[in-house]
Length: 345
Ligand SMILES: NC(=O)N[C@@H](CC(=O)O)C(=O)O
Ligand SMILES: [Zn+2]
Ligand SMILES: [Zn+2]
Image (cartoon, rainbow, N blue to C red; front, side):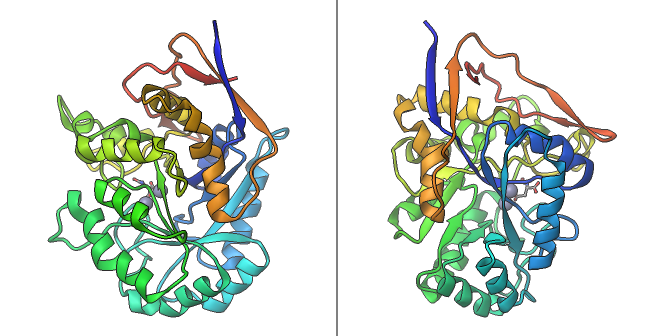
């Protein structure tokens, strides 16, 4: 008997679409399944101003194949020079849904990010006033802090002080990877939420490092120990309402992943929902799958739930896509290393 699951159409609350030929290649992979996505602004150069976001939005809509529906939720990349009034205007017009904070140097294309958090005080105050969420890449960049500790240290040294200094500021802890982050979001009030990726729910650092290094599993924040993954799975499948799917699908050309210095990011968009359904089923939580992928995100962002539905069916192990073509390059699709049984009908 085929099992099937019909849910409201999901959204992706953390997505990299890039630009140009890469945008054209990866956008349909998301739009096929997801109704909306929070689109990350870490292009080169970054999407900093309202005008930048409007132009990027136009390029995204132009790249959307005819017959597909998709709504990009635009974000601004916060720099130390971000103009609070520009943010206010871009939010008031409905153009932007969030502002993204990258500590300078923390991840792919973050060189223009923030070094001195005092310099963005005024912008944070305006965001708290108008209810515009701050999406945070939560890792410190200090060379003396071990890469496996950077998220936990960020919560204590940066995130918690920012939240205390800016009451009411809505914050999304993006792509959380640790038990400390899971604990912190649960202890928070209604102004705090967290996204979780596919790879951090399915893999730990052993999957990346034992028996040889697997560059397609290298992303930031880096995969942690198994007990951290278990804490994330527990949080996601528990029905806790302030956590939701943000795939962080982050395409890089295959040659930049399979390289001496591998780029950070995993391209999960084509199989993200199959992966999440597998995780939820394994933990007896298929009845909470819809909340995680379709309901909790809109509730936090104050947006309507989708009117459309999507059906997944369970069957024999899927033939997984391996690569897609993007201009002169290929992008390698994330392989979770275990069979997947749920496919989007
Ligand atoms: N997650 C990643 O490893 N990479 C992302 C950036 C990010 O989300 O930190 C990218 O843009 O490639
Ligand atoms: Zn990030
Ligand atoms: Zn990301």
